[in-house]
Image 1 (cartoon, helix red, strand yellow):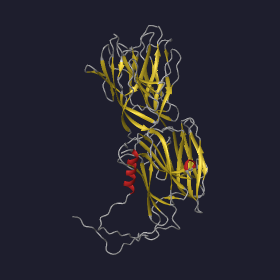
Image 2: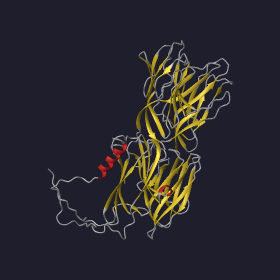
Image 3: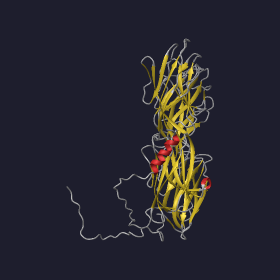
Image 4: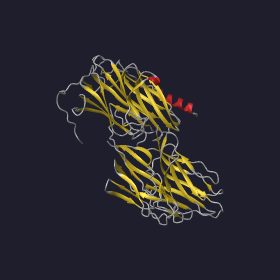
Length: 302
Length: 282
């Protein structure tokens, strides 16, 4: 049976009425319940008064991303109107806010539709508020909140409220700063985000100065050290070693072929301002770290 | 055996029977269309969308629509005209086999206007449809395509020619979480020790290098097995066990490949087999 025949069978199976026994007596009863078709109660739990406005809030870290907000409102004259606003947030993770006037009526539906956004990159909250500007604006109702991503729309009614640090984050490959010769790697978590560090990769080229180097990786919350890792072999002069720090791997280096060093990392969550760096006992002035490559899962954290 | 308590006399509360307000919060005006989006992988049969609507005459109308998802994770959109009324329920379900979790992601909503120029204003359903679970409205959980369990796939990579390396790329429109990797390397008689490193990159930039527990000499056959919670171990005579960070999610275009120190022209990798959990990522 080919696909077309299977499809026909399925359609017939779906559309065919059930077969009845010959002695079965059919009765068609009129329903006892009747429904109002005039003066029907507005089909919405959200009344918008003349003083209410829409407040749209976004925290975005994805360049080139934007979104549309569509609201469908039943006006007092019975007409349904469609309202649309385009929002283009900055990509620096700071708060972006839009205040939109509304007309009196009943909110039937509200959607937030992403454009060029990926999971974990743009967190949006839409509220009904009364008044003009903060700080004198009591929140009337949060309609939707969550991350926008291609194929994922925030929708009201029946919304699913998602916090900014919930669900899948944005997967990012970050090429860090390339340190000058003799200096260590140092990276900081940017403002308004949290990171889950998946892996870090970097290359160290050593000069001819005769000494073994022992690269360690550390994380700190400003002044306090959080965790420190170390390789199991030293790196001699005039060599190029690749270092991979990652979760769920044990620290290991082949004794006969040590140019690649793999170092275990714990499950590591870092917030804005916390730092990651190397500290290399034995580092010489002519040694040179390449730019580190960090693979992280990132969430917006206002 | 329990007893049913029944108060004497008629109930004190009376309910409206004629002229009941429609039992649905969603009014469909005459200008609305149903919009169905899907992103499918290897979907052989269409999915069904079934609606129950309370029509202005007071009767409940059931209608259904067919929607054919793609097989290559690309977007397929269909538009369906609707009659005026109140939407009571909506349901998306698959018939037949072949719909596993992670295989077909669907969005169903309403728009005002026709076709691609209509304005989308109401999302009803978002999630993966499977053989045994329908997506429903109302009270549905709107789910993103990259959350929850994904599709479990055993992916066979290409068999490299002798002297060539293994490379497996995450396909367009997908994201992978590798659960295990296995391949075999047969070395020729050249008397050098090979080191097989597993490299994960984003198509250009190296993210991670995983070393083996030992080197492989001439004239030998070794199986390389990567998995979660494996110890780093040269087990038995011919198998290496190597830990794999299974929390590592790979996006489309990312690669899993080997880089082999001192690989010779006569060395030969077999077909790599990667067990992945896969999600659609539009």
